[in-house]
Each structure stands twice: as C-alpha cells, then as structure tokens.
Image (cartoon, rainbow, N blue to C red):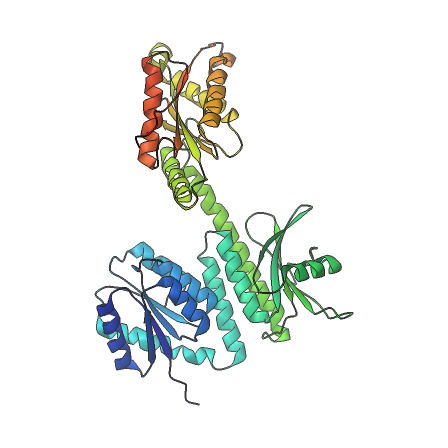
Amino acid sequence: MALSTPNVLIVESDSRQTELAMELIRDVVRAKVDSTNSGERAVELVSRTNYQLVIADCGIGDMDGLTVLERVKRGSPSTSVILTSAFATIEEAVKALRYGADEYFKKPYNPEHFKLAVRRCLDRRDLYTGDQIVTGLMLLLNCCQLISGCLEEEKIFDSVTSYLRRETGCSGLALYKASGNKTSYVKTASDADVDVVEVLVDRHNLLKSSDGEKHPMRIITKSNGAPEIAIFEFRCVGDAKYFAVCIAPNWTTPSDEVDSRFRLLQAQIQMTGRNIQNYRGVRHLLYLDEPTGLYNTRYLHLCLDQYFERWEKDKTKKFSVLFIDVDRFKGINDSHGHLVGTKLLFEMGEIIRSNLRKGDVAFRYGGDEFVVLLDDAATDLAESVGERIREGVEGNYFLAKESLNIRLTVSIGVASCPEHAISKRDIIEAADNAMYSVKRSTRNSVYIAEKKAA
C-alpha cells in the first residue's frame, strides 16, 4: 500500500535556512512542508498534525532546540526529529541523541548528508504504519529512551503519563504518590474531571500496593456500573511508590503483552531514578564547602539566579541577603594556627545554620566570610535573623571541648530585593558594603544597606 504524502515541519528563525531546508527536502521526496519560527508554535502544530519529521534549529528565540525535541517526542513519539545548530557542542549533541533526536547537524551542514538523514527519517514511517505489535514496541522504546535522559522526576512523570494515555486509550488518568502512610495527588494527565477519578480511587481503595514487581499493571474489571480501571505501579527516586490510575482504558496493547511491556517500563523508571539519586549526590558534593559543611559560592550564584528570575516573574517574591564577616579572625590564625582556624570556621557554620529559618540557605563566601540567603524575607525580618546569628556567635565559647573557649563576634550587612538591589552583583555588593560599615565602626553589629538610588 502506497504511503500518503509525508508532513514535515521546519522550526527555524532564519528564513534563508528555512528555504534551503525546503529545497533539500523536496530533492528527496514530495512532501508537505510547513515552517514556524516559534518553538511553542511548533509543539502546538505537532499536537494537531501528524508530522513524520520535525527539523528544529537550537537557536530559536522562545525555546531551545532540546526542549522542542523533548516535547515533540513526548507528544508524538513516532515523529522523527533532526536538530541543527550554528554553535554545536559535543555535550549538546550527546544529550540530543539521548533524548531521541535522529540526527544532529552543525551549520553549515553538508547538503547530501542532510538529504540522506531526511530520507532515513521518513523511511521510519514504515515501522509506525505496519504491524500493531511492532508499532507498540517502538512507542515503548521511545518512551524508555526519553525517560533514560531525564534528571528530573517531573519530566519522567510527563513521559510516563503521556505513554500511558496513548497505550491504554483511557478516558482519565491521575498520578498519586504513596510514602509510608501518607498518600498525595501528583498530577492529572487528561481532560477528565479530577473529582471523578478521586471518587473511584476512594471507592475501590486503589492506592494500595499489589505485587508490583511481578505485575506492575493491575486491572480492576467493570462492576456495578463502574468503568474498568488500570493501575500502573512504579518506584522512581527514593522509596516512595507511585500509582498511575487509568480510568476506562481502551487497550492498544495485546493482553498477553501487558505484563512484559509495563515491567520493562517499570524497570527503566527505577533505573533512571537511581541515576538521578547518584547525580544529586555528585551535584551536592560540587556545591559543598568541605571545611564548613555549608554550600559554596557556586551554589550561591545558582540560587541567586533562580531567585532573581522568580522575582522578575512575580514582584511580590521578596528576599534578602546577609553578608557575615568574622571580626579579627586573622589574629586567631596567628595565635592558634590554621588548623584551629579551620575548626572555628566549621563551628561558625553550625551556629549560623542553627539560627536560620526553614528554607534559608547558608554559604561560605570565602576565608572567614559567609552569606545567608533568606527567602520570602523583607529587610526587617532579615535584620532579625541577622541579630539572632550575631547573638548566637557572641554568646558561644568556641572549641570548648578542646578547652580553648575562644570568644568571637561577627559583623553583618543586610540587603534586600528589591529595596536595595535588583541584580545579583548589586545585592551582594550592597550587603558587603553594609557589612564593611559595621567593620569600620563598632563591629559586632547588624547594619542595613543604603537604599538604591531612584
């Protein structure tokens, strides 16, 4: 049977590159070719049109190419994706292939290589228009590939729920998390009424662990007018169990294939979950200051970037920074040696951390300087936290267990967003200057930064 004319979508901000790609595609095959310069628009088009191939540039303005790739493959696994980039890197190419890209070209690309890639991608249509079992296995393979490239649980959940909706043809789907005796709703992945799903979950006591290792997909048949229900059970990061509840499934998977397919999906999720845990452990070490046990400046800059990005979107999200310097610390090193100085810094870190609110984060800035980032804290609250730290340090006998009983004080500067600064560099500078105002006068005090000029 002859295949219909393929649909191809080009996602490109440069009109000349779009025209070149169109010419090369038409050298290969008679195809219907659409184009857009927006990643969001591309994802929307793919959700409404059966595109066999998407060719996306990584440099479009509103969405990077890897995000386009991920969202296209999640919504339409059978669609082939070719990425192009004027600033290609090995790391980005590896990530693209891991996320399911069929090809990755650095611009300017070889026209013949590009045409060969287009031909190969369009030939894959045969796999998705032939035997139903083969098609199902290809979709499962694609889902597992997407999951394997994830480093965030949320993206795993998106891929799993998209696959379940497609594979079960259900009318409603909701994801729940069970940890110990506590059960919580995670997300809904359908247009069905959440309340309807909740009623069925409660009525049938669905969120109870079954023999999830041997039979990851539990099926509850129709009864008393209630629809059939399918529950996919899996673990991801940590010990919590997740239950994807599918209401009124209309299966595309053959009944004798259900166990094996969902056992494979379950195993892929658990393996990726372990990888995420390992990654988080390594990342934690990258952000840790070993002498004090606090976070380092690398993590401080990352957090500040996130806080300012959030503030740009929501101007009610205020936060503050404390800049802390240990008074006359050089004299301690000179008198007792650097080993004692290092032990003092660790104990100082413990005192700072013990006087923070839940959610506040402390960092060692360098030497005997520390920074505290206080979320949802205006200047007056930040000053109060700073005063609590100052009193905690002043009242402490350092290295008392070693009979040294060293007394220390700290000078603290306070700066807040947006009152004193609206950029990362400026807020650190404002808090630092406020701290030096204390150092030049009384020491052992908390000082608020000067308001920024209008």
